[in-house]
Image (tube, rainbow, N blue to C red; front, top):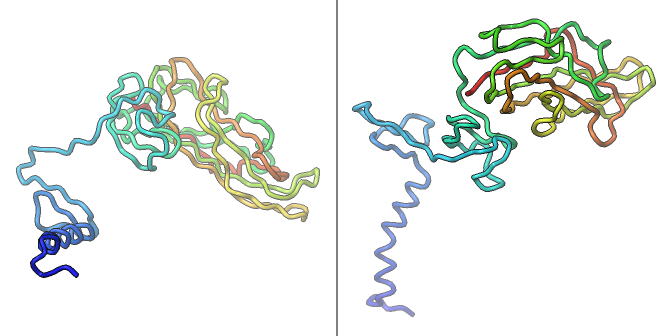
Length: 263
């Protein structure tokens, strides 16, 4: 038994208020420069003088497709300020595969929608370069972005580009009576060379009934270093596993490619 005069008991009793304070802050909102934190806000930083800012950690990211110099396995959404000129100075977040930049260069964006390639169009289950370049929804810089047929975009200035691809898909029961689970993988290519990871579509289940179909999609964003004159395309192929259905773009104008120059 420890007596009331025990030094051990005395020390621990003095820790109680401190521990209660820590626990209180652990489960409450935190305000810096303010006593009133907004509803639903975990952390609020306020400077009434409007003369200061918040400085986030800096990192020298040499390769945007790897987590380094941060450790492998970092959490998705981790935010840093990249100081590497070659890969692109600015704020980046880790999306689980590559570093994505928050802001793009003003006036250097383009968006395309797919042409008239519906269910009767190309079968993306085979190795295909997707016919995604059709109508131009907008092009801030026609000199920088030039179409190369209906499959590619020629980039006329060396830099880091953030590419967002959205494929609206339909899995079908093919003429050779294919059926089962239909999935495809998509990947960005630059001048015929693969860049970055494979992205898999949502599952499309096809029955053995003639004319049966199921809809799916692939959407991903990736940062890519592109040299002047190189052509960026998207290729697809059948996913590994039991994938026997055929997959095509769903209909005209439902799939898009959005490109923005970040540096």
